Image (cartoon, rainbow, N blue to C red; front, side):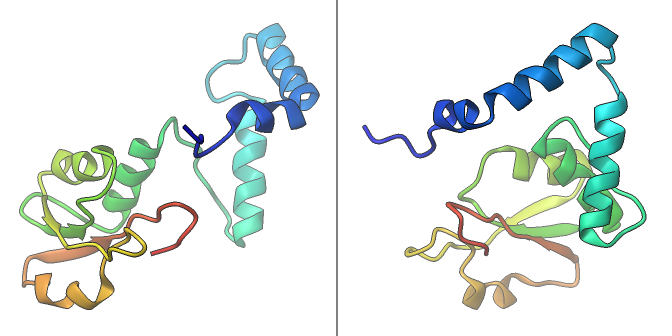
Length: 137
């Protein structure tokens, strides 16, 4: 089997930097909303040209916040990909909205953009794409 991602090699390439950052957090017992989180949020906001950014614990949390920011609520429909981790649909359902699955493109495994329009209804609030394998949807 050929691994999709070699996380061990990635870690080894920046091991000393990661180990030092972890050591500092452990020494301060600064586990939640600590200095590293504040710096990360400031750097990401600056990189994106925004005043603020929010670091979250998981991709699921990120999806949930994005949907909330878009105003998705109970009864809304969100068009998304059926070829994704369950967190995509879970975030939609958690807000009481309905995931509407659009078929994927067999060559990229991303949403087939030619089929999205036929899924749009008066209840459609958002389209939640899933970017896969380094290919943006």
